[in-house]
Image: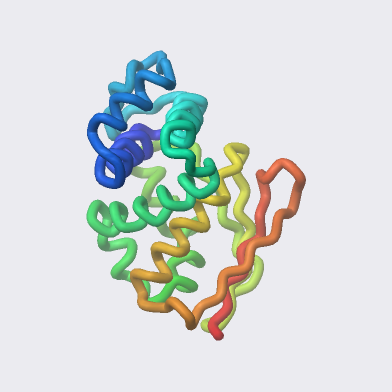
Length: 181
């Protein structure tokens, strides 16, 4: 997993909780890298899991809730770090429909070793988008948080409905349907 995900997660923890909480969860997680991450580095996914579980234990918040909140936070950070991707689109449907062919293509140019989830567009109109998310990491809650962040960014709360449908028992495949109401 790319280091930018780790650095942004620790940024969320510091912003929402405290710098001491960052230190505490790094200690609790007993990480091989000792919590020293760079945005351009690549680190084992189990280290991210250990950090999230440690935060869950310290805060009493469920892991899916924390992952969703991280997705919302991450969308805001992506807007700061990579505004061109977001300003090029005028809606959440447009943005999500461009993830695989545009955004992930550009991410792979910057980070050739990035292991990204896939977003396969099944159907797409201006009013409705059906996309299948696939990832062996089972981070659909992160994807939902990112989508919710986009909905807020484009001011579509109450006008865009997100439906989520598990396609397998493991959580590696999920269908998202975005529909204007």
